[in-house]
Length: 244
Image (cartoon, rainbow, N blue to C red; front, side, top):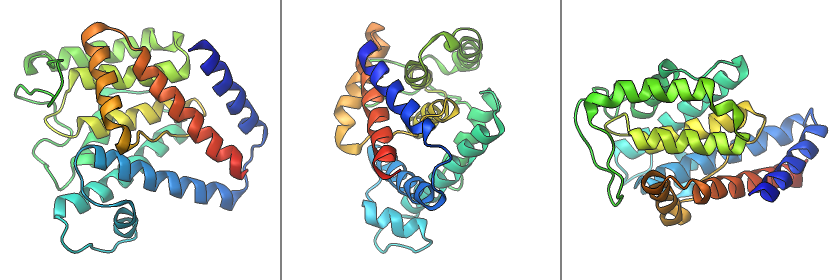
């Protein structure tokens, strides 16, 4: 893992040395990443819109034969990304309020009753061995998560920190719905705050992604998931460096 981090840090330093990046090149890369991120994050959760259909919805056009929820998932995800970008720009610290606000955007118009509200019932994660904590413990677990973030997380490499944020959040599963999308938004929030481009967990890697998460939750071994994040971080850096 150390050698992979060193390679990533070298590429990040190379990208940083080229800043400020060309305005329109940067704009086109960011638009492409927003599309890929939105499409894949929604596809992982079962949204049936294709990449091109997702692009059309982002442009404000309705796709026939698709549900209102699927359309809202695309629009909401874009709004949540814009919220994440604003947090990064303002250099705000992570807080429960921010997490709830991001989640509120993810579920806006889909499940307003539960948007931004910690769950009031128990849930299971489909296909996973790990069982999230009882809903009565969620508020305390989230407070402990933020305490860890404020007092311990800074010791980690930014890639590790982003991976651990995702793992810890999903392990708590604080909301009834929308936890996966929110977790990936929080993971990219951490990467972006540290100057890395956002990453895309691809829908075709869903099984590897779920298995690495469940392994982290049930054995405490975070390496598989951290490596997955690191590989995607390098992929994002390579895309930037290719066009700059």
